[in-house]
Image (cartoon, rainbow, N blue to C red; front, side, top):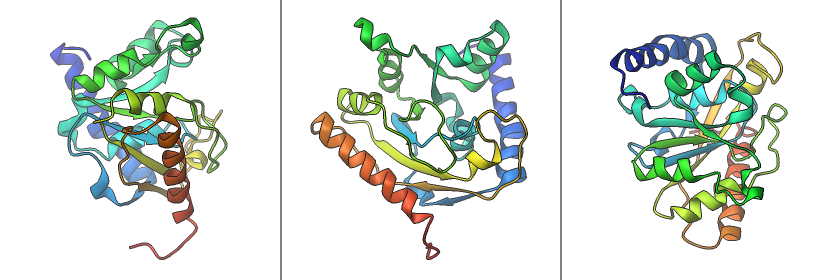
Length: 218
C-alpha cells in the first residue's frame, strides 16, 4: 500500500463516501452473523464471486479504521489492462495482484498473499477465481486451501453473498437496485490436510448459501 498521505486520504474518502453510498444506501445489505467478521488481521474473508461489487461490498462491512489492512486479491490479467486502471486498483482499491497460471511454471502465486498475512492484513479472496452466474456456486480453485495450510493460525472466514450478481451482473455496467444479503460463517483453519480443509470449506459455504432459502433468520 502507498505511504503517500494524499493517496491514503483519497482511498479513505472513496470508501467512506462513494462505496458506502452505493453499497449501503443505494443497494442496502442485510448481514447475518456480522459478529463473525474479523476484528483485526491477519484474516481471510473467502466469499463466492458473482459481481464486480463483491470485494467492495465485503470491504464496506469492515470498520473504516481497518481500511489500511484490507487487501482484495485479484488477477493481474483482468485489472491491469491499462496504467490508469492499474494505478486505481493498486492505490485506491488496494488489491494484491496474482498472476493466474503461475503455479504451472513452478512459481508460488500466493507469496504476496502470505506476506500480507504476515504483516497482519485482511485478505478479501474469491476461491472460485472468476465471476460465475448469479447465486450459483462455482468450482473452487486450489488457492484457498494452499493458503490456509501455509498459514494455519490465520482464520479463514467463509462468506456467502446473495443478490450482488443481479445488482451488477457479469458483463454489465448498469447498477440495478436489488435486495442483497451477506451470510458470514464460522472461521476455519488449515491445521489439518489440504483435502480436509477444502471439504470443510465447501461444506460450510454451501450451508451458508442454503440459509437464503429459509425465512427463519435470527
